[in-house]
Length: 143
Image (cartoon, rainbow, N blue to C red; front, side, top):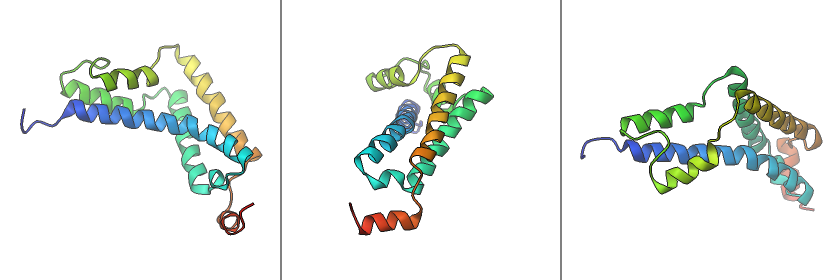
């Protein structure tokens, strides 16, 4: 197999990246709430909050528009190139897919992602992102 791209390995890497993005989307929400309650100023840093909001808006837009996530599409294409089935393979692949993929009617995903997006938007009002000056001031004068 020398000279052939390691498609299966690349597919597993894309799957791992996809799980990391999903963890960021879900974990980011948890961090914003917990961090504000625990006084962690970094959770309101504008770059973190904007990255999280962009990730959530992407998921919500994909659901509303009926798009398949590009990471899913890339992973499946790589698996086809590796002559592997889309949902079988290595131990890591199996468990990461169990975490990420599940079956439900499309309206369930649209509703769930939309409600999640509304919750993230609400947090912008309850725990607004800090401006650069506010963030720098907090770093100089920790509570």
